Image 1 (cartoon, helix red, strand yellow):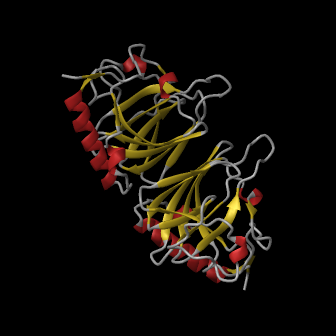
Image 2 (spheres, chains in turn purple, orange):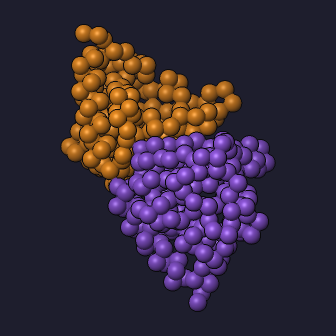
Image 3 (cartoon, one colour):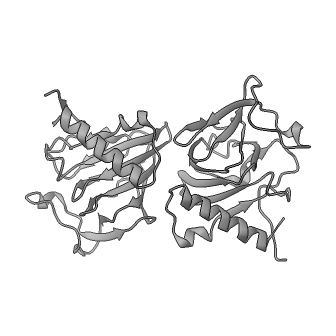
Length: 181
Length: 181
């Protein structure tokens, strides 16, 4: 649950970070920035701000904003009907981003969210800077994190069905609920 | 046919325009900018510069650069095997772009390439500014043009198979040939 006031302030911060990163967005797009707390109610720690630039039956393009030290929880994109699942490439626009994927534990520069260690099972660290990109195959688990400067990223993918995403943390609810007060 | 020197200078100009538009690209990407003269040998009039950021079996992301008054000739993306054809969304990053699609003749701000009028059959003008975007369905004919300031655009699409693109002008050859001298 996020309050409407918190949603609005997060939208404004995200819009500012997007603009500063060099991505030009329209005023009507700014109001559509989705503030996602994954139903955990601790947006600053686990959350992401999402601006969908394009969504068709075949492809999706989103701008993702991570506030300083905000973490997008471990998740994967499962098959949905005829679709083998979302294939996603994330390209860093601004900031440094710490990605975690399957493989040897090399976690060094990022951190596990306190008290949630068991829901961050991937510990193989890949550090990406602006201009770098990484592709996740359908079903491939991943999580990522920004540190002090926050980050702006593009997500280029086959059709996104965010509500179908699966998370390691069983407490996560992807559909955002906004409280009017 | 393009000379290697002309290719290099066009790559450099395109890289500069991309960077100025706010899109961050890596040094190794700059060298991969494709300079496309459509086999017509008049790059300044009919041509495009293309940087492929992403190409998988499902999606493609490209940055397109139009030099001042350069025109991308009328074309469409036909079905290829199981694929109904490329679905493409173009989003303007910098500059004003004049798109031409099926519909009433409203051509006013752009121009038909001199001597090639018969190969520009679409005359319905749509003017897009930075932040605006337009989607072309598979098989949907289109052409577009920049005026004095040139333009930088994103092309987000289902898988691109550029060599299979079809053009109204029968003289066009999409595969680029570079002359060593």
